[in-house]
Image 1 (cartoon, rainbow, N blue to C red):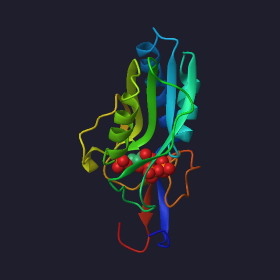
Image 2: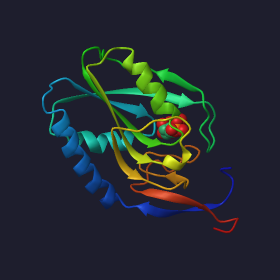
Image 3: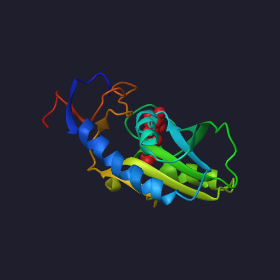
Image 4: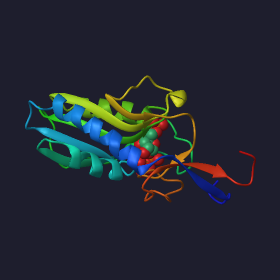
Length: 182
Ligand code: PRP
């Protein structure tokens, strides 16, 4: 698919993302105000921009860890099989954990990851996704916090790739193929 010509139209500006993250960070700081044990877990690779901005807005002592969970394949569609490619470095038993994700699409990734992490008996396990595409859901999953609900568009930027490109765009854009009518 990546050989098709395309342009990227801005969908959510960098300014709108920053404003939303400020609000989310306030809610999260309130939720975890009673703990000094928060571990913020970014799911590689898509969350790396979001987690960097989010943790800098949190008014809490946090530890940052990463986990890589990937569906098979490298195309536009998520497949159903989720693999843990890289595990956490630290222990989470008895600790408060916030899993940070860029987008919930079918829901398989976060459903699998939360089940996987829950088996380690964290004290609290919450999730945050910058984007949510409810129209694509295949398993019942809702993040504890969501930045933006979006329609079923093919999005890139702010950590999200199209065939490993465009993760460095500072905004969320929508891919528009120019070899077919919009
Ligand atoms: C993408 C995205 C989410 C997941 C969402 O990850 O970053 O992790 O798919 O899809 P789902 O709700 O249908 O499971 P991908 O496997 O493309 O890896 P990446 O984060 O390295 O881009």
